[in-house]
Length: 583
Image (cartoon, rainbow, N blue to C red; front, side, top):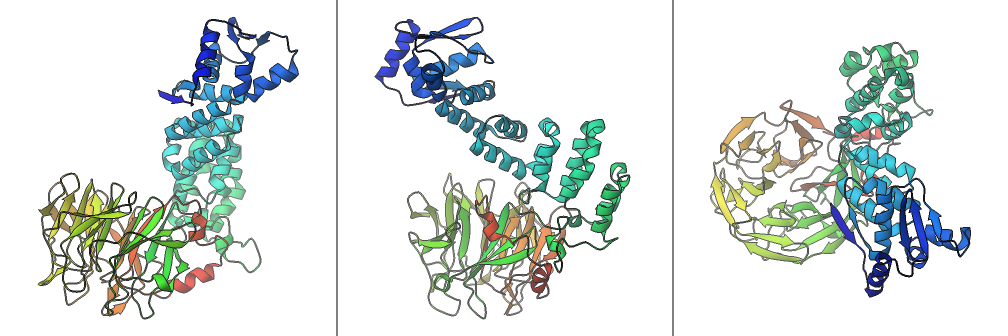
């Protein structure tokens, strides 16, 4: 149950007492056999519907008004709200109450119900809530429910409400570029929806299959799962689409001279999240922020700021902003930073923030419980074991307990409410040691050391474990990767990367570990690859546009202007292929 209240005053309390005592009431709302004595002026104050009904549609002296199509319970809640400004909204009454409030134009109550439903959205109810907004004009709730369906489509398909979609509603969902799901899930959703009522729905296969981006599936999947389906194979139009997608017949461009990237069967959907590569050092200092669109497997240059260049810094995404922490102008200068700044992804502008207590380049940065943590690094004279925490609400840094080890070029991640930091370099050389921080106790605890000492590595939480990837042993850049099990306090080797590298960017996006750029054999690399824990395989991805080391990566999601950071869906495929040939 959720109690929502509007501001009330003494007069509303007096009016309600008069209503309860049936004093000075000048109207009766009759719902079935139940009568509700009311004051016209009070209902006019909260409802345009009643104002029109009382003052324009009926004689001024009319006292009894019959209300049809409403339960007495809902009428009582609306009247109580008109007099008291408060209402008890529950999962059991919210939908009926919303429809009633919308019917009588009690807009404050409509907002309360919409807010309640928006907070309750889940895979089980989002389709029903979206359909509810079709009955009543509720644009904000409709947009929120629709976006929830797109972002959680795989879970929504598993629920009973999914089967209640109309063919028009399902077509609308499947057709949008914003649907965040793999195409095999889209196809299987179509088959499941049709199988629920085959006699009525089999005719819609020709409408729904073109909404599946068949060209984005593997040929093996198309042949084994799509073409083998009797519903598809028995329909000549559907068979032709599958043949085109498998390459049995050439893909037809929608416009002369255009590539398959335009084609509805081949156009990638928009990602929900994007990977940003920020800063770094290269032959030409890297002022450009690059965004990776994993659906299109392509990088896009989104910002070029010469005055905001940094390398060997930390980056984090928090509360809709990208933060850049510490770093240096480049590793050969003596311009080191204790400052932090924040990038607004909507306006593409930077704001300077409160400075750290210490200068830190080669710093390790992560986010925990709404705060940014910066650990270790180098201040130009010494290796650091100090660490500090930034609170966005106060724009201030606070020193926390120091680490057990001095660490520069270490890497860190957050898992199970702990910060894990591994490897790095101290005055004696590369480190194999690792430790975790507990924010509740403000304590660092040593854990089992890695199998290989290294600095410039990448550490990331993935699949419930801590992965440590690449780095340098002081002589060679490394391909090695190992994973830490928090339950057993043990490190185990996993398959090495395709490319040896150190001082690179690392993040998890699209349920895979991505590593980008870095240093390889004393030169910068633009190569990008990703690791899939389900297959245990590293695969190459589209390279960065600029080779760089000392960069930092972060994943941003839920942007209202997401399309600004993705590849336009009408670009030529030839433009995508140019950068892929560089690695």
